[in-house]
Length: 109
Image: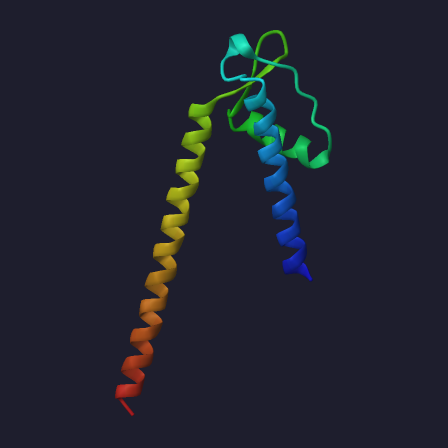
């Protein structure tokens, strides 16, 4: 049950994040001069929007409008991928150690 709830929550968050981004893409709001208003339609959108503002992906202008910083978004994606590669390497190392341990234990019998 918890796994399916976590999966659903992740899917809702991903959809909201995509829809927030699409709002700025449709308005072509990729620089301060093209900034637009944005009012999140729901709680998930509010959470993703606030997170994107906090991480510097969505930026606010002096007059309270917002724009989407594509460079910041790309940098964030690169950080995520780098973290995923590190996790994958750790998993592979642990797996290799387990395989070696099993092989050595089997050879000693």
